[in-house]
Length: 141
Image (cartoon, rainbow, N blue to C red; front, side, top):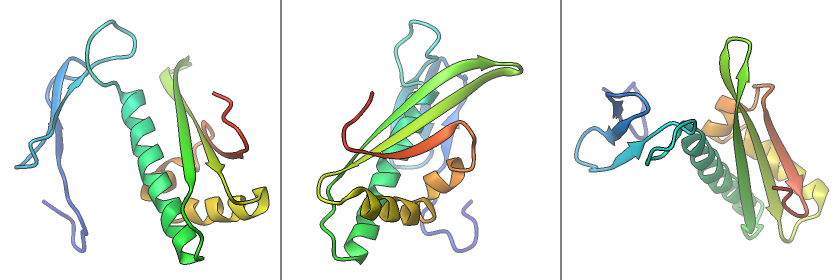
């Protein structure tokens, strides 16, 4: 059931953890094999899901901000997600690099800062000490 005011609602179901398949409830028909990055098993792992979600949503949001200022969207985003052991289990380290072809570093950083306050995925992640966003002239990973 959607929350009041929802612009889009979806429900993703996972019945077996990191082995098997997850699916979108309803008639969208999307199902994906899921797995752990720690075992040799086919399927998409949580690190990949986070990387896809952040890269896709943040790049789209940056494009919206660019268009707002009459700038042609031209960004490429690379997101690296690493799984590490920590004192209580595991953690992710997420590094998002943003490359602008036409903007100088100061303009690019202003666009990124505005997008960080607008993108729903970035807003979920940006306050975490293990997540970074960096404007780059060339990708480092």
